[in-house]
Length: 55
Image (cartoon, rainbow, N blue to C red; front, side, top):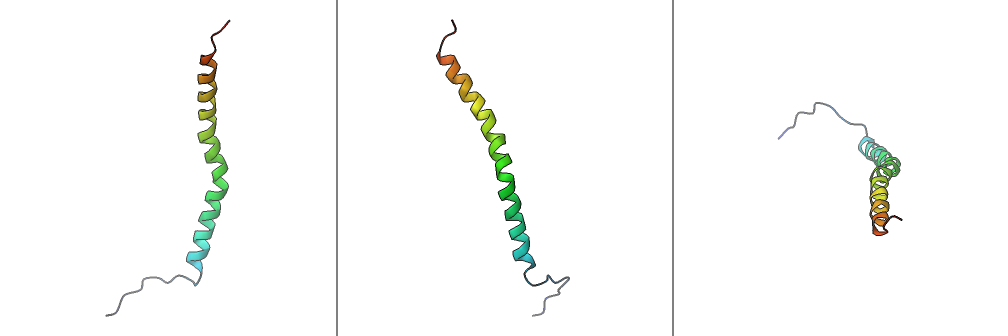
């Protein structure tokens, strides 16, 4: 059985590509944590402030 090869990848290209993608997600993790953490922090602060009645 013979398979038709339309293109070939250089040796190590898949490994370097996945390493690059992993590095991008590692760098973006800080932004993701901020995007999730800031609204959560404001929500918690608002809930805590509602526990204490105003003067």
